[in-house]
Amino acid sequence: MKRKYYAVSMCMLLVFAVLSAGIISSVQAGTLKKVVAVSRFENKSNWRGQWELDRGMTDQLTDALIQSGQFVVVERETVGDVLAEQDLAASGRTAKSKSAQTGKLVSSQILIKGAITEFEHKSGGGGQKFGYKNFKIGQKREEAHVAVIIRLIDTTTGEVLNSKRVEGKAKSGGIGWNVNAGSVSFGSDGFKKTPLGKATQIAIDNAVAYIASEMSSIPFKGRVIKASGDTIYISAGARNNVSVGDTFSVYNAGEPLIDPDTGETLGFDETKVGTVKVTSVQEKFSKATKVSGGAITKGCTIKGQ
Image 1 (cartoon, one colour):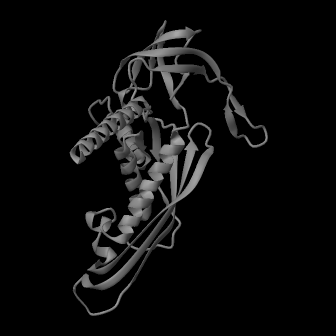
Image 2: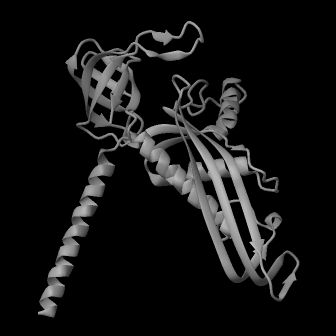
């Protein structure tokens, strides 16, 4: 009887696991990846150590967003280098290149800005200690706390869509090694093993979860890059998780609506002009067919989920 019960239980668990995997795969397959850009963090904490927190945290969040597989990430930190390469290519001092053309930067739908407000490490201990050079071993207690404010900004209007404070805490105790900050680089394997490194990673993970949650309610936006009759080319492809059969609503942006007192762009007087259905997918663009509506022209906005 026990064996029969065990077999039935295992069978039910297996079925549940298969169904769960199918649901997860279906959700991932149907979710469009929006283009986001990560701006350099601001360090507003009291930390004045040897680590460049602004650069380090920017790199860590950028990597975490990429590894999540939920976004197309544009690294704004390297824009200066890209522009320099474009200028060099345009100067005629190098062989002609199609990979570094002036004005060909990828535009993002959302800009992510971060501000480090807390980056703290406290340690204490007792008992016998001995050490050599930068390393010490003995009884110790360590606590770390990292807090970051994350803002999501609409790149079309400059409006802050939402903002949240995320944090990470970690502590350790017992016998272990203590290494000076000057001998460990930010983000290295050695740093990740410390309470401060673990607290940083927790804060970054919480930031990615928050960004993903907020972005899920924001419609995917792209552009019509070419229109030839009922054949439409759109700026969304395999990298955005587009599939054959996906449909997008097409809008004419119209003129911008400007606040006469502040000069702020409030939005655009959008008008829906039709719907298109994807027939073939390339890495960075897709080919679609108009299924309803009027004239669709280059520059129209496409929206989808």
